[in-house]
Structure formats: C-alpha cells, structure tokens
Length: 254
Image 1: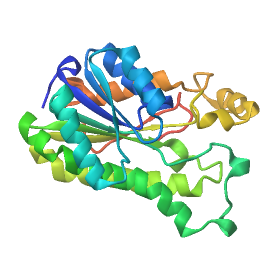
Image 2: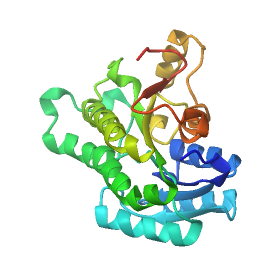
Image 3: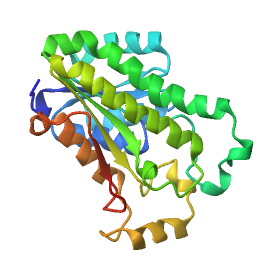
C-alpha cells in the first residue's frame, strides 16, 4: 500500500488529548480522514473532531478490550471508510513525575500489567482489527509510539518503560509477519514532550535540564513528534519497517 496521506483513513488510539491530538491534527492537515479514538475523554474528543471538520469523527472504545476495538473499527469503516493506517498512541493512566513514581521495592506486577494491557494489548487489538482492511488495501501502515527511556532510563518509570519495551518487540515481530502482505510496522519513540496533560506534572527545572542537554536546545513538542509519524504513514516510508525512530532533538541515539 502506497496511498498518499490525503487518500488514507487513519485510526489513532488515545487521540483526544496531548500527543494523540497533535497526531490527529497533523494527519488532518495533510488531508487524511481521521478517526479519533478515546476512552474517557469524550468532551475533548468531540471538540477535536469539530475543530478538524467533516473529515474527522470521535469513536469511544477501551483499546485494551478486543471486542470493543473490533466493533469500533466497524463503525469507523461505516463513517469514514476502510482504515489504511493504525497509530497506537493510547497510554494507561500515567503521570510523568519521577518523584511520584514507585521505586522497585514498591512496584507490583499489577502496576506493570496495567501499562502492558494498554501498550501491548492495545497494539495487538488494533492490528487484529486491521486485518480485513490490510487485505482491502493490499497493505497498510501500523505506527506505535514508544519512548527514549530504553536508551536513557534516568527516571524510575519502570512500569511505563517495560511496557513500551514490550511494544517495541511486538512492533518488530509484527513487521516480520505482516511484511509479505505489504504492511509496514514502525515505532516513533519520543522523549519528554513539552507539554501534554501527562507531562504537565513534570517540574519546570526538568524541562530546562533536558533542553540544555539536547543538541537542538529545546524540548520536543507534540507537533514535532507528530510530523515524524506522518513520514511512516507516507509512501516515502514504503521500504522502512521494523524500525524505531527516536524523535527527541538528538538527546539519545538508538
């Protein structure tokens, strides 16, 4: 599948706020039809759909619930057309403030499981729901959202980082299996973003410290990361799969 973005129907999980909303706006700007998935943020999702216009619509579903995801994809197809691209951005409840996160001595499996159910389970559910659409389009695109904390684990986000690492592994194994069907599967890994609802809890001095250590001299914005997601969905990335692109202004190297 080498559809231009303007001919695509794109499903974005967790798209009502923050990075997901920035990704939705980026695709809308390029002419795509945008399905805004949300779990609890109904008001924000509907407001974003209204802002974008008739090429967008909001669709509720818990991305970790396989049946709900399948039903959502049916509604998306009926409303916006057969999806060609799935972007898995949804995040389980999380606050990016190292002082508020559990250390290993207090961490439980339920903490890791809560993150993994959304990060990995949500990706699996979305990929499975995309299967008939891959066949219709003779291919497709899957883009997952990761983190640069694999390379730079400077804060005790053990549950979040472990779940995203598992998601990176699934991204790569899915790329291997789905490649013969013309499907590319890639990850865009961000660092701390300035600013989303989740990162709003980050102390200001942390943003300043990261900016000082980053070659570009500033903390990456949601809009900047969203533009990298566009690349993986575009025909320009047709020969790229199983890759993780770190978008953090050069702070770390993959």
